[in-house]
Length: 75
Ligand SMILES: [Zn+2]
Image (tube, rainbow, N blue to C red):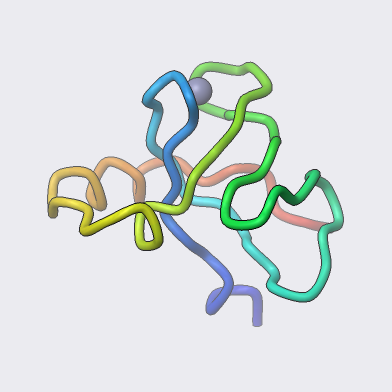
């Protein structure tokens, strides 16, 4: 059921991955409007991440790369 909350994001270091973005609640991240602070599984660091679909129009290459990595699922 979380599938619909999967969104492609980019961290402040430029890493691309997919994460769960629940509109009405934040279980594991600090919300900063359309950006938020969370753990980046690609670079293994904490960073500001931005939704690709909200930050502009992502290229197919970016979406493909983001789809390769998904952060840890909420138990
Ligand atoms: Zn990163």
